[in-house]
Amino acid sequence: MTLDFHNFHSSEMKMGLKSKVHTFTKISAEKGLGDALLTARSRLLHPFSPDEPALVLGAFAKLNQTGVMLDVGAHHGTSLLPFARAGWQVYAFEPDPQNRALLAANTAVLPNVHIDPRALSDQAEQGAAFFQSSQSSGVSSLKSFLPSHQASTSVDVTTLANFLAEASLPAQAIDFLKVDTEGYDLMVLQGWPWAAGQPRLILCEFDDFKTLPLGYDFQALAQFLAGKGYYLLVSEWYPIEKYGVQHSWRRFAEYPCRLKSPRAWGNIFAVQEPALYQALVQECKAQHPF
Image (cartoon, rainbow, N blue to C red; front, side, top):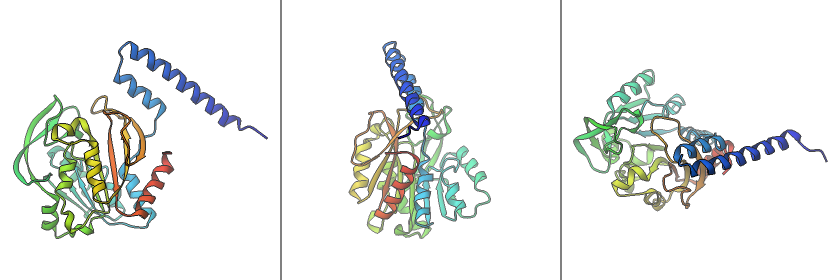
């Protein structure tokens, strides 16, 4: 029998690193360094960070499928651009004027991307207050949840049911619904015309820090989706240390599950069809073991 010295040596190195990091964590916690150290520790032990929309695109590609994407909270278009370039029809919602200007510039040569300036929730409203933060362009929201948030403009709010009716899009024609609205994800989903059909795959964000003041938590969001008959896969990230900087990812977990930390945040994949769910799981496992 021969030993694979490289793998053995790498394993020993990793065990040594983990031991040292664990000791440093314990000592520093006693000295009160807190969350900053937890984040540094997690980056050392878990350097992988998944691109969840890219995993969705890969799952559809495994089945040789393209389709229609709704991107609610499109930001600058990072998530939707690979879909648009792969031939998907994309409808992007971005109420933040500055983000929307960059989104329009990034998608200017893509006629299959349609941009809507409205916010989305479970009720339509005109002239709702909208909040921006100097900390990050990614935390604009209908709700102020950071000290740095400022009411910067007003926006019109609609529902997905209203939008689909306006665009003459059948509910069953939507293949991928991505929702990232800094707290309003459940409300956006509640505004969907569920009796008319369901998206094949939904990707939405959970973060109790943002959503508990709005009346729901991770379990409520997950149970809402599970109640619609979806298979759920959770992508859990470590607690956010600071907005506007790189965050650390923790794990994939199949639902039902509990979060490793009550301060965790992340994304839920909700998949309607077994074959598509298995394709997504394969994409995730190819990048990181469960």
